[in-house]
Image 1 (cartoon, rainbow, N blue to C red):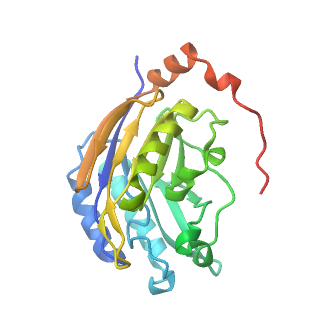
Image 2: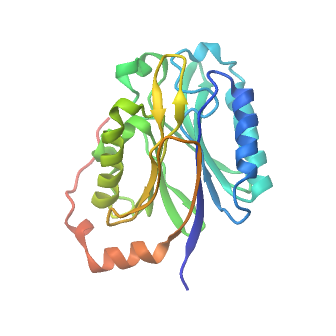
Length: 259
């Protein structure tokens, strides 16, 4: 019997530096997701936009957002994923949380902080990947600028789904489109990318292009410059059959990451 997973990607504009309004907005959008969805993915920094002024955000907001994610996961019966401004031990992080319906969570701190915008000066970079096993699929969740660094995402952990949440601006959207497809092909995995739309208070415009690619780089879903709810089903047998037939991962280079 095929092992499948129904995923919902929410592409949306964001309210600048206003966690309460963004949580309220996404509560309404999540309400519109199909009841049989098992995984709901939100953009990067979905409660604030890509702010380089984390000091403007109350330090308690990270925990409040995690509590909200747990509430929505229980309410929908689906795992919820997204990143946020998170304050911990005197540092700010761009932290992704993968919250399961049972209330447990896994978190990943963005490794490649976006130096062009000065993110490295405001947020402490993470130093480790996470792998999340959920309903028979193994996920590797990453954040925006991580997409440009293929060594970091190289499939040495037998993951099935590579997942990116982002605030990727319109002027460089061609790179986003190209690299999402490339990451799927080179890692022989599904690759999902969820980007925002609209504009922020720094004058940056975002035109979505949230997308899903299969292990051969075939585009399964795509949405351009509008608010969108993308729903689709992924199939574990697609990964197994593709890798059994085309054993390209067996020939990958061996390496160790040194921080």
